[in-house]
Image (cartoon, rainbow, N blue to C red):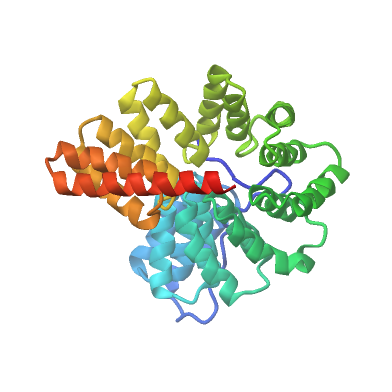
Amino acid sequence: MVRFPLPVFLFFLFAAPAAALPGQPPPGPDSDRLFARALELHQAGDMLGAIDTYKAALRLEPNRPDALSNLGAAYVRLGQYDDAIAQYEAALKVDPDGTAIRLNLALAFYKSARPNEAIPQLRRVVASDPGAKNAYLVLADCYLQTGQNQEVVSLLKPREGMFENDLAFAYVLGTALLHLENLEEGQAYVDRIFGAGESAEAHLLMGIAHLGRQDFQSAREELEKAVKLNPRLPTAQSLYGRSLLTLADQEGAERAFRRELDLNVNDFDANLQLGNLRRRSQRLEEASAYLERAVTIRPDDLAARKLLADLRLQTGRTEEAVQMLELIVKQAPDLVEAHVQLATAYNRLKRTEEAQRHREIVDRLNAEAQSKQVGR
């Protein structure tokens, strides 16, 4: 099921139908008549009728950006996001400077839980329209979903005056600050949300703050309150599962992670944790599906990539494991475990010299770590 990632106090953003776009060549009379009729149907809520009529207009004028964009908006209303995206992209080929069309394309990606694809479109929107408040918030939430917490802070902090007492702004920025373990500043936004009354969002932020302090019992209590108040609050079930996992309640944690994925199949933490749990319990096919999705969501995340590489090694896909591990040690040359895994993989492939080289790296890194411990 697709969900809206921003909290409940940000109104839902829907792609709205537009009248004929300014600055475009005048359409033919028949196309214009059909477009006007499609717009009436669209505004009356008859999406199927509107879609058929927009298509009829486009058969006469295939390059009408207003009809293409409105057809995309109608598909969004039906939840047919791939069809909507195709129409918006076609409209942008005709009208590449159409900021409203680009925003609707970004929202279609966002609503279909594809934040990585929404981000470049939203960057272009805010570059061309610096006053687009909603675009800033959606872009910030996309950064938040993809683990780019510093990008959230860099985007929103300088624009605090634009948002004044907007609770969605406080929620997104506060969440990013807490994930960055900037607890004092993040707490100010928590207090702002609590000041508006008890809410699932406020308890979620408090839970994140406690996780940052490694106070796992308090985190569990706050996150339990959050999911009781709003079981569908994005990331709440996933974070609740993480708190349960740290307290050795694996069964409860798995239930929470699965509930999160029922709301959003692309939640990174839930996929990562379930993948690791399935790997440990030797349910390797399920583990692979979860970990592959986690790596797709956050391609640069070392933990997800290392777990997937380990799984590939575990299931005999040694060449794939080597390719992944070589990239990991290039990015993180001091990661001992990755060198250990590479040595194992090279041995299996009878590449003994390379295996020996990585064993020597492991010995060196362990010796360096031991000398640092002694020097303390």
